[in-house]
Image 1 (cartoon, rainbow, N blue to C red):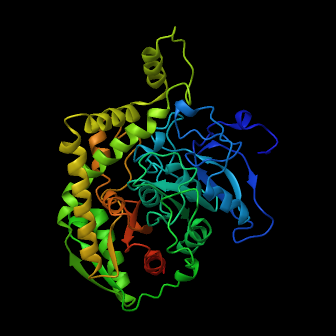
Image 2: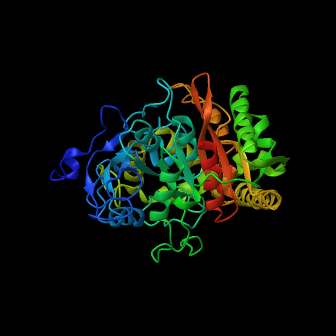
Image 3: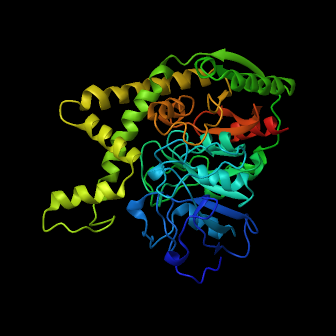
Length: 436
């Protein structure tokens, strides 16, 4: 599609519902990603190209600036081919809460592609783009990577600039890559990683690493810790596929032993209290004045505010705003938000202890195969609980990668590898051995 059209003329959901906006942005003539096409999750700002976050609230929002990750893509010579469908404001695990309809799963017809970065994973799985960017607040890269049978990396918090990422939960989220191979995902991480003066959460550590070179498959002597709590609750077919993958890693020189993360049983509850609390604050800006559709208010600010949010937000976003506001309200802050912060610290300590005994930790990425379309919409609790293996990693601000491990009943299964802070090279090396 020609870039000569205005963003609003071409801004639409494609017939496949993978893309919300299809607009080609060509980067520099030379660079690490010259000749590579990249799809971008629609919560990452792209100058003069619509960025909706999958929400009717931002249906016509066109950012005046590029996110740092987009700027680095352009400098590396990448060609951006469009903005991908996603759960509204990143809130969901299926890409069905999008105001623009659900995205398909090219690897499992009739099933969800995972979420919230489902469109990005689907674009890579369908061959619509060589690479893609997503964001991961509680599994939103690793979940769709597992469900679509591609590779997805959730970097250490602070490795990749969040400048230009529309915030859901600031203390948890990171931008990261999708690709059809570990090496390609690592090459994209090489481009977007590094400190940024416009993002106070970005760090210098890891910026000089060569992640693509780490994808050499050499895991001789690698120690793998398997958290029993992240395996026992998985579907039988998922668990069998996971152990097959661990066995293959053993045959390549790695060893494994079981470890325990006692705090994990509180991980999902703590995550949702914290994430919803941060979301209720972040989404307060969408009020019809600064962002969102204008309404006829007759001078009554309260009515106008309520009407804009009623029209602009979908049911899942409203649910999370209400729960987050309640958790932060007077008399309940310490009862819920304070205790969730305590649980988060406990989760981090458990991960630190486990990683002191192993180079990486391994688990199924998702405890279940991809849901059928529509299966979880009427049962949000089921959707929340499916994040049990991914959200603890975000609570601990650790890096993790999902790599295809095989299939169960013809549905993709992902293997999750978790590393210490700024341990991306180790998990990339281990993941490349899974491919081999």
